[in-house]
Length: 194
Picture (spheres, rainbow, N blue to C red):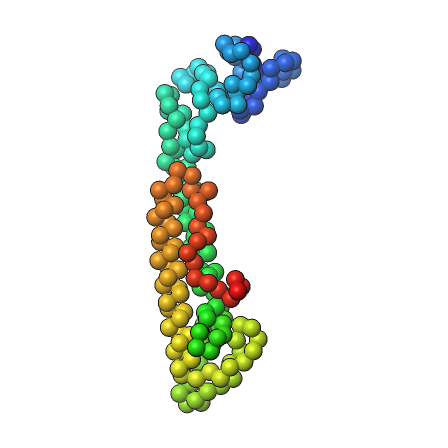
């Protein structure tokens, strides 16, 4: 069976009619019964010749002349891409607030709020307490004890998320398809989720 494969993308082919722009195609006479085999096989170039082989199991594979092997550069690129996404998730999760069970309230932990907590830490002992807005737009009396609880909870949740991110990085690095790795589990709860 004569099949015409597009030079720029060997996954695209034409059987009939013969392409008008034949210079853009490679003509192969394959010993196959019908074209359905092309669902599981593809054409590869090897030493200037083309041959029909089973399709790769992953987009990360390349043909080495005899078999499909992992393209290490492409794998590293995808691993870096997913690691950046994991770090972004970790960072955003740290901005999602902390829950202080004693008062039953969520407190914001965005960059602006963290700066406010640091400023408040300098003066809270002088003013004793102050009305403080919670994530749900209600107010509580902020004092040294509550401020310390917020700081402690921020450290605990951010550390837990750092540990979780590292666990996901390790597992993702083992994956043969990093772009499909699911890193959505194990993160600290945040205000948007409740």
